[in-house]
Amino acid sequence: MYETWVERETKYQGRIFSLDVGKARLEDGTIAHREIVIHGGGVGVVPVFNDRVILVRQFRIATGKQVLEIPAGRLEPGESKEDRARAELEEETGHRAERLVHVSSCYCSPGFTSEMDHIYLAFELTKTQQNLEHDERVEIVELSFAQCKEMLDRCEFDDAKTIIGLRELFARGHG
Image: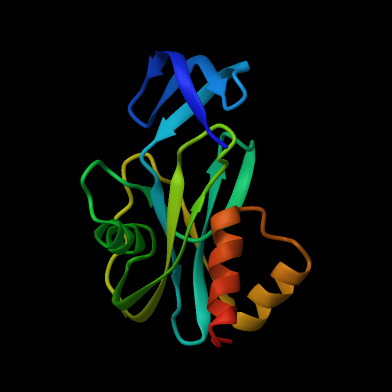
């Protein structure tokens, strides 16, 4: 099954994403309205430090609340996923990783956006200095493996990349 654009117009071009609107022809010839967000994707990092996980809590205006999540950031065009993961880890938590392990790549919501997140586990951390961007306000939260597992079991995490990253960590024999 496939779809092809028959009309497509960029209605909005922003710094982070663009919005394309148009009509697509379905395999059986039906014409359907489509609206898609074009996004370059991002990375998320599960930092493991002394049998603990370092998370960040920040207010996310799209949700209207604070979200507890793994450090993450948006990929710039042409940028290496691993380089961005390393940069976000240090910027948000003040740690460098000796070893990064890619564990997953997933579309965030393929029904309307091209955004794909690439998730890494970070090991052998060295403390450096947090270096937040001018508009970032994050609180660092360290949780034990047991606390993370309990919170997963109670469905207390609501960020997809965080849930996937933590489940991958535990599925790979950590904790």
